[in-house]
Length: 281
Length: 303
Image (cartoon, rainbow over all chains, first blue to last red; front, side):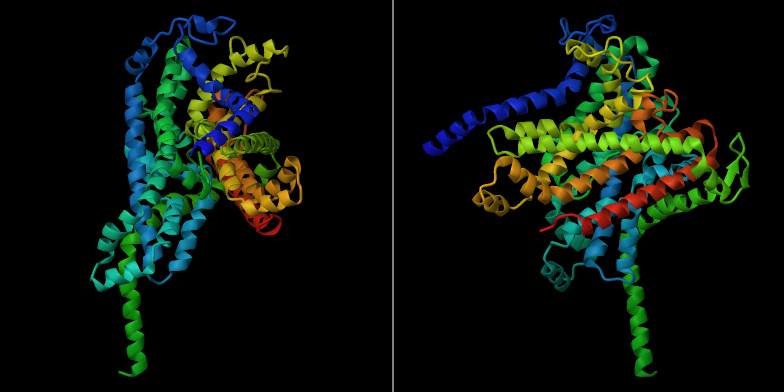
């Protein structure tokens, strides 16, 4: 016990140069975020003077209060929350069902259908936005939550990820369930889902992060400021509220915080999802 | 009824039964894909055969001409060139930086988890958040980047309004935004390299640098290829940072493909031309995906 501790201490000392590199690199990576926080706490006139302050001499926390009350940050956050929650739940539902069929059911055309699912991953969303916009326009879904969410309720990536996991469950489970007279739905709800919580959590974190961070689609389908998501909100405030850059930056920090928390809290799930095939948009 | 006919009837019944049982599971996804992926793709191609009048209303069949016009127009070629250059900046930047950071946190040291979290934290930052942050940092007069460069004796630049620097500045923003992702994926790749490979290298007396060159890099090549190709695809799909930082300017120096599609379709209402560009984008991304696939089979070292 003592020896391992001493060895660890020894290693820590010999790794001092390594730590110097680690700290220096961390400082560089965090610097943009740090400066944003500093500027979000400044007086607005201070932001117009040179040289820039590297720390807030008199932090003005009221900027954050202003961001939440004066500019419609609360509404933006609510819209993003509704959008991301709907997309995440929808993607979980559709991909759990599809992945179940592809792993546990036998039906005609199963393999070709799976490849059709996979092929959707090769279509960049940006290449099909014009017809998609026309569809939403014709349905009269502009400036609605349906317009923001319905096109994203199915995910080939999620289906693929969950199928990978479902295939690792022992085949005997299904046989036993058949003998006990479990139907497909009961087997899915009471056996497969409880055994796949980690994989489902991975997909949930992933879907939520992606949905919350969307930019192009919400920009196209929302015009009404009340329907803006937080991403569109801060981007438009940045050009509209030039005299209040500090408040806009406070809003930016507010928009980032929930995702930062999500990424840190669910890091191991995120890593699993990203290494299975990465997408961020 | 003959035995063969009975068997056929049984098969047909089972076929029907299985299809009926599977459809509630598969149809929700399939229906959504048909409406929001496959139909739009076909319609994009169809729209590409049509010219739109300046009010975005009448569509006139012009056939393959519009695709030929897109591929030969100097504007679109310029967009392609800009996108390629942007891909080069961002892929080289985030892959090299990601590799460096992943190597740093690959060592098992006390407190290393903290640094792993810090280095991967930029995945949380959306394109809008990153761009608004960097817009401030890149401010030519009072931004901190020019201030820091000035301290190092380097000249201040008009990052976003100088055609010479704009694409590079947008690239910097993008590298920062993507480096967390690259670090996570490369670190996972490093952790998958079997320890035996290093042991045999150590027996051969390989030094750290040689070990990196002859063991780590070859074993890591599938991961690096993956990160690079995903990076190129991201670059070809980039939009948000351009829209927020430069709006395609100055002098079209940052007018990447997706921004050009957006501008033609939603600002100039030239839906036909934009669709033709979108189809070209689709083909390019498809080719990149196939390149990744073939390259992974052929040239990359696998155990």
